[in-house]
Image 1 (cartoon, one colour):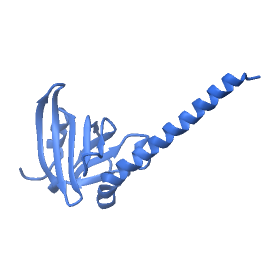
Image 2: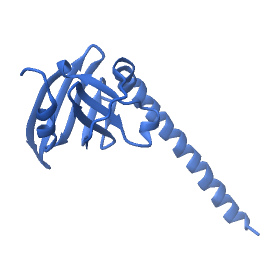
Image 3: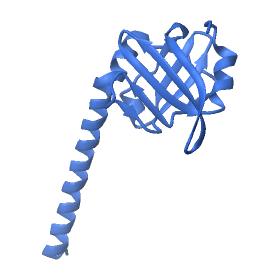
Image 4: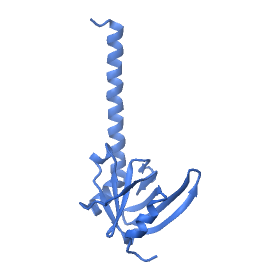
Length: 147
């Protein structure tokens, strides 16, 4: 038998859990609407690279559509592949931006060491991605665009 105080505590925890779940879904929907959706609709793909890299930060189209450690990027002869990690990946379809959209790919040094900075531009917006330094070698092995 539950005491009234324990019952109230459990009810409060349930309500808090439901509120947090609703906020999470609202947040992922906002991210999807602000940038990823446009790129995925335009450049959706079934291709999958052999290797992907976790992006420390990735912005798709809008400054508020930033993914911290939840987006991955990979490289194929056709272009740059993006996929969202679970649970975001459920609502975020993967897409492949062609090499012609790449404007910048370089190593930059920061507080946390070296990273590969990748900038892509399209009518849908701008994509800025910070990947591990090792990603630049994988990019160079696959890209077909001219500097």
